[in-house]
Length: 307
Length: 274
Image (cartoon, rainbow over all chains, first blue to last red; front, top):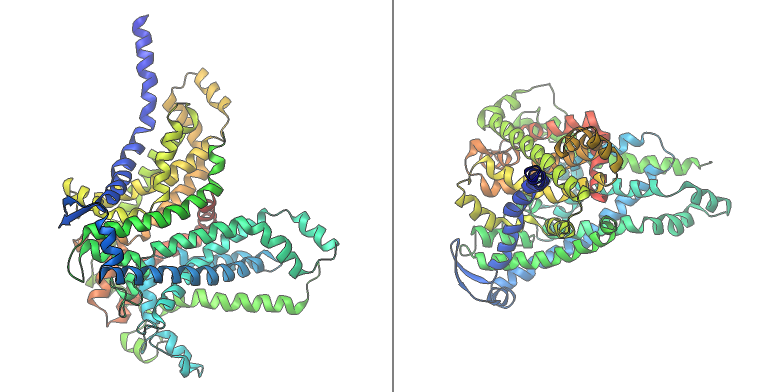
């Protein structure tokens, strides 16, 4: 009898095997590296090896010492520009497209699929493709502009400091608009049709319906998309890398925190490897993105915990 | 409902304009891949004069394209399968068994949802060095699996909670053990969750460039996105090859999308909102 009970007990413990692989894989290859990356910011480094504990000195260097502080503030300012321009253009365009597709038109599925298609391509493929399209002499864009008599508008899109960052933002938006459009469409479909009917019976015109009913009802979707764009703008790496290389050229005019981090971590330019400093940049990004994600989780994961 | 004709006209005009914006670069990529380098140089916007697949054969020869595709397939298939298997079990555990540490476990997984893993790349590099996995496909598979787990666990956890417990209880009375219940009763009900997790991870892994850039040094172990870097580094003046390479690497996803566009779009939106 006792033997049987012990056997049952062992059997009961076997249930933890369900959890074990996920915890191990995630713990070893994600959580542990994340924590180590954060702790690394408190050490000085010699190559890949920790040298000694130096407290917050890496952060002080990053924020106050030339040339690091110049690189840092230059890069983070580009991340902010990236965010503001993307959030405005991407959200407005995708909202308009979602509203049109949600209205009475033919070929909804076709337009949805076409707008969404770029999202499926690798960011590096998109980046390389547009580096060809935006090429000053051989590229399709300048040739197209010349062809329709707009020579005045042709320029070295990626080679000029004035347009390089905006060109990258354009490419990013090109790839992401279809996705945010789908999020808005899902939001629109969730709104009860009776509300619109009622508004129309009360004599509201389209403009009033959109500003007074549709937009307020879409507020959660807008919120989520803004935060996703924010996270994307601070995590962005591949587009810059593909079109401008790891130093965010020309003259660091498209340098962002991740490319700066990449150079510090793998020492491709400006004086070799500086893992401590790189980890400090990572911690700054952890904090920025962590706060943003908390906002989004607060909105949408709350329901998971309400048991 | 009555809509004025000029409003409709304006809507279609806008849609046509954006169709051009979104489709033209892809169209240009495909048509240019059929042209000769001279032709691209002199008439960048013209359509190809003949249907010529030479560029594809050449790009297949000059870089290790068959290895790139093979590596991408192996890494994607292994990562997606392991993520599905491991996370569905963990999600089931969290949703079904009431242990006191469950809420801490959810928090534990949530950290991974909150922080960008890219930035943990230096410690990851050192782990892979110690395990002797640098410059192997295993390094990529481990990273993608670990990166996919938090999202997948939360999604499965949410879905498993919607399955009525009575179903499992009756199976248990019929003599199923816990693993059989999970495998035979619950998992088949999870098809929507499986397709969301599968598609989201497949797209992420298939298209990822960052981790191969860091962890893969040998060209014949490159995945397709990293192979593009080799191609652009070595043949930067031969645009016919570049366009052919880009088209070849996008084709699998485009074809998959043509067959299952609805599933792709639904999975990605569900994945974002859930």
